[in-house]
Length: 163
Image (cartoon, rainbow, N blue to C red; front, side, top):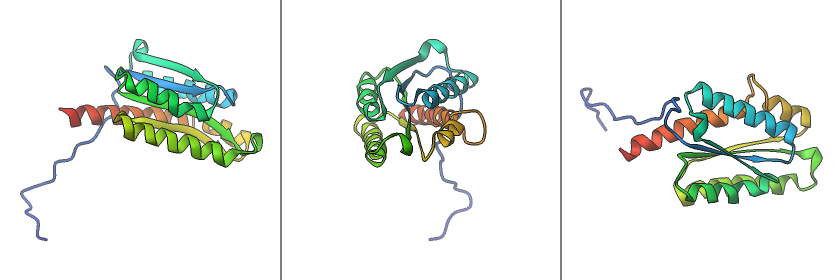
């Protein structure tokens, strides 16, 4: 199909400016040495990108399986432009690793689709505690930062799609 060089597609995308948005962060208490790091990195990133600390809500849950239901409750309030789910599942610490990972991933995705609110999967899945810790710190594998950046981008994108 030929294209007209004078006409370009209209591109809509988010950006990395968090100012004016409300974010909820749902954090698993299980593997707290990892999830505390994820939370710290996500909060630092949100603040660096202009989020108002008064617009950030942190909700603690027991484990990764509880993330989706809590995210859904928060999304349904319509008070948050995005919900960030932070958790850590380490294969060596649970005999039902695959079930927990699958339940969390499927549930988080389902909440986003059902509510229309961006719900970010910030759950580290790792073979060892050392791998999980590496992903919860500043550096190349910083998953807390990645989750926060995804939330900001989706929040800004959805605001533009609404306009």
